[in-house]
Image (cartoon, rainbow over the protein chains, first blue to last red):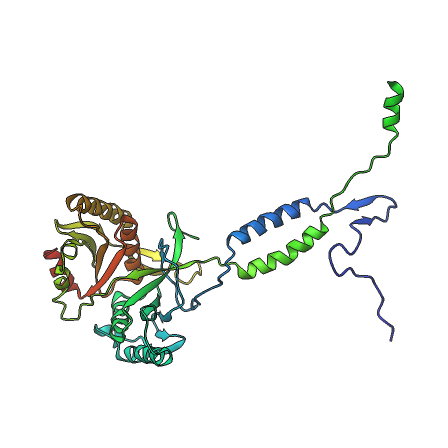
Length: 179
Length: 192
């Protein structure tokens, strides 16, 4: 077995020579980096503009598409309900399957109310009291869900004590372009 | 003069090169970091006023709107399967008929889904007009509340669109009422 050849491979940019000597002799090929620097500068500026120091406060499920709106009100970390055409999810736990029975009548959804009341009770036990901030809830609804389902979810939130409900949307600028 | 000129020409020219490689190294570190922490979608929220859910009985679609002068005067955007209206104290005005739109919901290039949509520009115009008329007629009241009264089948996207347009016009405290079609029709007949 022969030992691998010991070729010198530069590990970092700049560790080698910037000018490669051509086989022809003393002619030197110069790599022009100006255009690449220009591109990187534009890219860095763009990324700095969309840089978020806060990170993502909410995780949007792949199973739903949020509607778009011009709302400027920032989202806060609250209890999350995700509603799509298949299931209602509270804080990551699937609670109720959306079927014909759910869509046949109005009013609150008992299983959802129970789950939300449990959450409220847990918060009360942990902290001793419930603040107004803890009575807020974020609802992430798929843009295809019917109004009845949304109304039932909101009625369930109200019944469980979450009096302030926020609907999550994707912010758009101007005539509807996503930001 | 000639000697001086020839002296300058004999000087060896040193072309100064700016070494870009450290800058490139820096960029190669910064760009992945920024890509990871960039947020391309900004999620915001629409705060809802207390929802007035209408049960299947549906008789109380407008019963709770009499609490105060502002509540009595607050307009409603009424969305049915066929039409959209705006109801104010002055009466109900037709805004737009619905139309069917083909959509590519699966992002596969096939426009295979038919959804009901409305002419939202008309709504924007009418809501702005309603806000202006109400503000001029009742200058002592700040009109911020509006109710979206809709039938059960209306898509969530349409509701959000109506809320968004109303917010742009100045009605930034939306409420939602959902009722069977018959109840919505009766509410349209007696706008408050």
